[in-house]
Amino acid sequence: ANQAWYRKLHTKLGLDLLVTGHRHDQELWLPTDRKNHMGGLTCMVTGGGGGITSEATPDPMNKKDWYGEGEYGFYDITIGLSSMFIESINYDGTLIKSTHVYPKPKMMR
Image 1 (cartoon, rainbow, N blue to C red):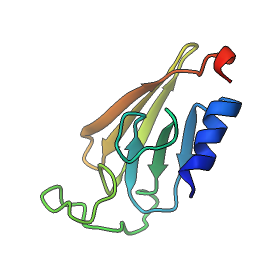
Image 2 (image 1 turned 180 degrees about the horizontal axis):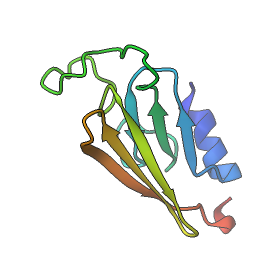
Image 3 (image 1 turned 180 degrees about the vertical axis):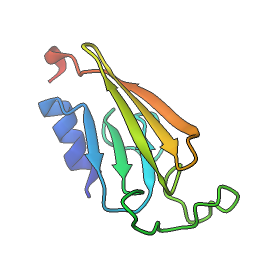
């Protein structure tokens, strides 16, 4: 997908979190990640569950074909009044990445 389109949804319409799938792995894109060109938008790819084979080995010692931080796992999202807290959890229960997502101020939309 075109990151510029998602950047526009974030900057013009106030989209705070993009949740997507399709790729068979687990990726949590933070606004500060080098590969993230979506203007501050946090993105999570959740495609590592449901019995589908991953796109690479889940072996953490062999990450050469990994797109994200894990191949199998799940996300835990805590939604509060002022933020969302996202935890990326590996298949063995290990917390591998986390972040807070805050709403974009209305004046910036």
